[in-house]
Image (cartoon, rainbow, N blue to C red; front, side, top):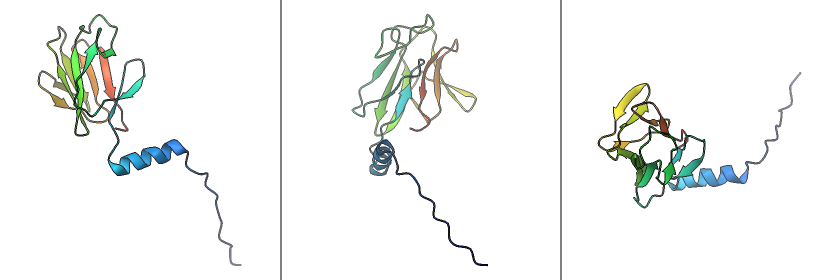
Length: 128
C-alpha cells in the first residue's frame, strides 16, 4: 500500500533570527564579548579600545582586576586583547592553553580572558 507524503509545517523564523542571518550573510556581524555577570555586548568596529578593569568601560569589580587592566578592540571584524601593564597580568585561555597577552592577542569564539590569579575578565561569545 503506497504511503502519502507527509507535510510538516515549520514555524516561521523569529524576526531576530532573520536579522542575525542577514547580518552574517552581509558580513555585518560584530563580535561580542560577555562580561563576568553574563551581560553580552558588541565591541564597536571603529577600532576604539575598550578598557577592561575596575574603572574601565567594562567594569570588573574584583580586587585582582586593576583599574585599567586590559583593552579589547575590534579591527576589521576580529577581536583583540592586550594587557595594560596590570599588576596581575592578562591571559587568554583557549582550548585549555594559556596565552599571555603582554602583546595583542587575536581572540576567537569561546576564548576566556582572565587575570593570572584566574579572575575572569571577559569571554568571547561562542557565536561571534
